[in-house]
Length: 264
Image (tube, rainbow, N blue to C red; front, side):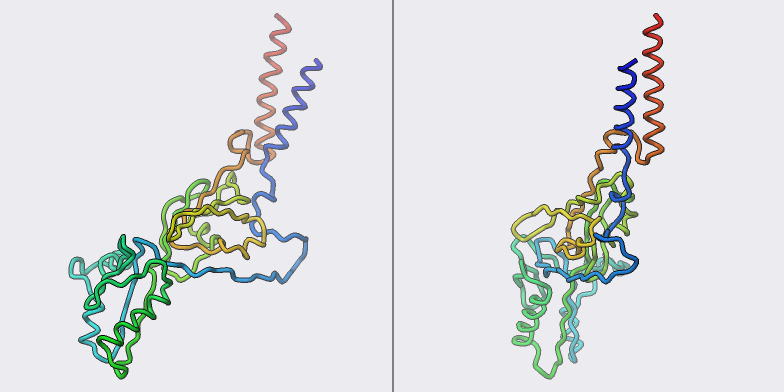
């Protein structure tokens, strides 16, 4: 009988520890309970530096429309292409040597540059070789969207491209249907691409200070991984009621086996 009580105590403790608490599910929690507060957020966002296989959209504007047409290609391979498809045909890809190839001026090294630095360099080259000051040359250089991949405990995992200049990790998660109830919000893993390789970073999305993290903003080619909580591997339930029901079923079955064993 004593063994039965010990078993019951163990199952009750297991039930309590297997539940997923509110603190594990709530995003961007403040340290103190207040009705309203002003959170000091400093925008930590390092400039993105171009890598191999990045796709750039480069557009020129000037008085001389005929000359501009040489640098603003319109794809004849698929005239009906739109959005990402058109960028695939008309954009400029960073090759394995870190260059983009442009009409007239040839290869331009861009590996490790920011888009602003590329814009400055192209303006300098074209102004020196092809356009006079009165041409009013204006160049726009942009990344062809922010592409990221999110896997793990997420409602809709997969690769997504967002046509914006900046994107937060909270927006990326919302775009993919939110983290599941068994996802670990306290230790979201970000594998980020750098010109010299990859680095692994971590961010706690349950803490309001995550908004001050340099990893709060998604960079192109980021891989975001949401690992499962230990409760998922235990399989005892994600809520208190589910855990209690599971534990009660297990206890009832074990008690029945013990009673039958004692009887016979």
